[in-house]
Image (cartoon, rainbow over all chains, first blue to last red; front, side, top):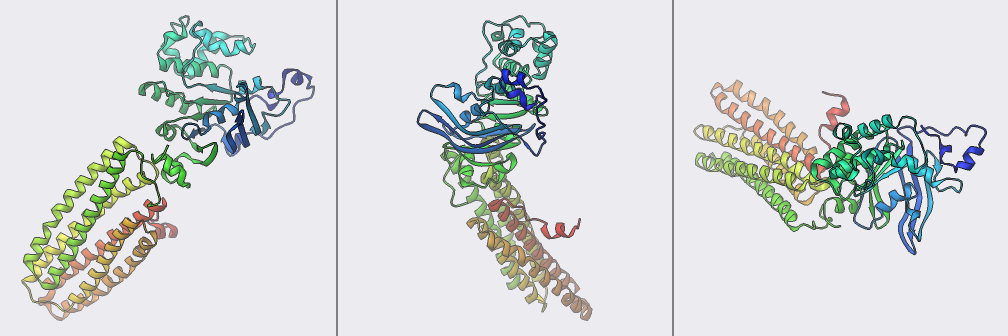
Length: 279
Length: 231
């Protein structure tokens, strides 16, 4: 596992002569990540109003809520993607293995290597082959693995795509079906060996069979990775997530085990939303 | 439950309303069957008992209709939270109501047998069980309608009273049979009716327990036995 020192800017990391101090290890009852009083703005508009939420290690956490509730912004804050947008600001803390990823000495590029993201629409690079797409993240990060063939195979096997594409690795990534393209994008994220995988509505552009395959994949990946998924599909949250957080108007209304949220939520607002009484 | 807003999908809202209405109708029919059966018992009226038995067909039909509607809602709506608890509770509740209906028919069958025989003094003790069991059923259904968990918990507690009445009846009937062997046929019929009524109270208790689950999401079944470590 990558130590927390990996978050530091390269220059600072190389300056470190002594090993980094031992940080508390992440155990199942300790969160892999934790947002603390997290606030996010787009210009003057506050879209997250002080979210405090744990993300438990090697589990799936689903973020649900109506459009505009801040769920996508929230996960974009978890790997410092929010600040990439012009006029966007973040306040509060996001801890990754107890280290604040917004601390001044932290390199956002390194954060994004440890906390990968898969987007709503499959977005393989159109001019790249399947093999090149898997390796694209590594290349962009300036990494040159020794055995790229083995890495490509491992990443594609992890997303159950290897058997389908092993004979056509030099074809364009866009030659694949929508579901295959999305799994290719997940493989591209996994090639960087992240610890956390953020998924922003990863199945909304997929048919039910492709959706089922991605959900099955999420189930398998959570044995090794910590996954946070934003979804509009509440049945999907109920199927794949161990924990579910309900956001409304930029606030966290309720967070609990998924079975509790979907059978006996504590908050009336959650109850009204998930039973289809508003939203 | 009553504080929740209506569903955005009006058709879904209407389906759930229809389900509740059918369930209430089934509860009302079941209550009617038991109270008419006990009236036939008190009046020793075989014709009335035969007519009363026919209500059970409506109860059975409602069970089929409600189960079908529950399946349809589960398949099409994938209900969650309070809606899910309503559907799963309803599917269990209809089974209890249907069994109560069958027990009412059993009471009618014994009333028909007894109506041709001279009366026995223990009749009053049976009536006492019937009144308590019917009140439990009535209150359990009221608790369901109002989502009233306090009333439901009261119903659950009252089951012990019915069990106690039933336990008191048995030696009474035994004495009658020991005194007069000619009363055995009637006494065993009375004992059967009392048993049916005691079972009706058990089913009313089940309904009340389900009301608590439906409203609070808390399962209170077998709480006492499990806390003692019984099997």
